[in-house]
Image (tube, rainbow, N blue to C red):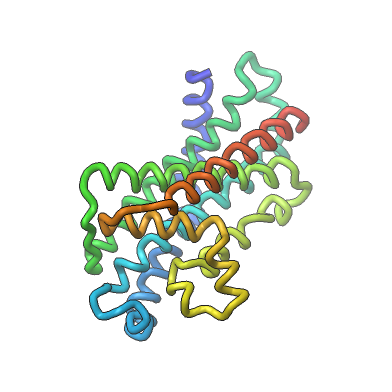
Length: 251
């Protein structure tokens, strides 16, 4: 199965590298948001953070979350395209493990989003970002980011397999991209009105954002880590099971 997955992974990775709109969305859009918020809104937002906190340090985890949401949204599109072009039926007629096809798409998503992660971190350092994380902390940051990517990838695979139209395949793309806006990604939740604050503090991306922020700062995590892991592991398991079952029935 590993050999089959790697062969199919090479195929899907070529599709990603040849797609200009994928590169623009997964890398350039998060970078544009980071530049906009730091250099246009950063001065006013910093007042709510306190004089000792640089806004780029507060913002970066949210930008990474947004990059993962944008990057994984293309999984649904690519799966829908493969199904409509007969790739599902072709793969199932070959002497390879059927799950290798889905795993190749997932692995492509992980690698492409990891590249986005490196580019965004590099630019943030140029913009003044500084981290107190040690080697263990950085490994935890990368691990959490990959787990987030994995969870969102499996989630986006569901409409890609199930959809009848391209619009349906992108069903989760806009909600997941917008969800970081209603979290602690860009501003502290304490500045939000009651109902919005409650939603922001209890949605899955807020806990991941806060854990990344604490890891970058070298701070203790407390229960927030377990909340984030529960959300991400739960989403991954549900997305994987549902996607696998839908793929078996798809033609």
